[in-house]
Image (tube, rainbow, N blue to C red; front, side, top):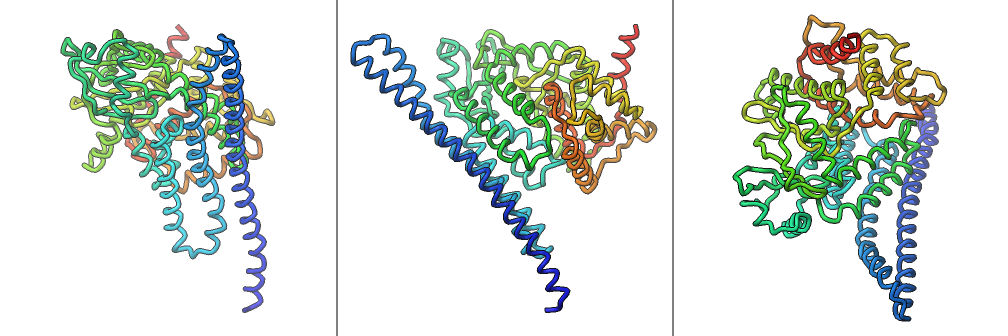
Length: 521
């Protein structure tokens, strides 16, 4: 072997060894954290058993007051076998995903370049299938997270996008007998007295509930959304496991305010467990949008709605994502652009004018009717912005349009963003990345055509932002921004994927100029 080749091999060995050590270290970290959670759960179960034994002995000794305590403990104890099973399945899936990606660097070092791309696609698909399988089996928080990721075709590898689509509206349904029990127990009437007809087959099944089509005794066709039974008992475990997983890979993520992000996920999930919140927001947003043409929100049937049931007007329509795909395949690019433009206008209107917005814009939550109306569904995740935050967000958008970095930095600081150093550079980099497309469109008002970034452009931008976040992390994010980022990154994923032709000013400027004009008056 020539000396130059020997030298190259000798130099590469330490790097390969470092990769192996890093992969092993990460694997051990995640495994240790998962085993720690299982151990903690087992010890909690043991403490529960000891409490039950003490209560039983007291009850046998004649302490009548211990009976109620024992019955309460027995109910809690009945949940533990299922919790242990859930913890082991979901925790092991997350461990396998993290480990496989961290070990990829070592595996790829022994592959040819021609084999590497296809092998990575195979790994993506296998991991996505693992995530989908576990999410569909377990439901709860991880199914909800999968739904959010399913709309992020701009940042996820294509195999992940392909596999996650099944989570949007085809989660495993509950047995109809369990659904009937929820309806009858919550409304205290037999199903036949409540509805003239009720289809036992759900038309959609999601993470929190499933929807059935029914007919009221007065002839109205309605959608009946029923919460999955026993969900409240597993959401807390899912969130504990999610926090554990995020904590175990925190060193691999861009430094940011992860506590606020996970807290917002938990808050919204807990709010979604009470359908009375969703009923209130559905009625509120329906009223606000009543004079906007081309947009529909179902009418609430309050008499049949409560904490676990949400009954509303049934509107016939096609899935939004399927409609976009059908139009694109038919070569109807103008139709794709018009539909996405209307969706953008809908969210700008909610955020900048109403200060109240539905914060879960994945394609499964929208329908397109035969008359081309856009139907918005599922208000379980809805957020209200304070007037101060809404005004601050308008300032950021306005300053971005004229590329005023100082005004952007001041507005972000007023909203509650903080970097570790106190300097605005990282904040400005992220705001530019989010708003560059809007600014570019505004600077080319006459063209009416967006220039969308390539995959290579987005990867390069992502690497640059990652480096900046490492050098000066964003240590504090306002909670409101988490939901806004969720909405606009999801919408951004759709826009980058379909690349619509549109003049963004047509949609953006009326919502910026209108409030500003009203404030002057």
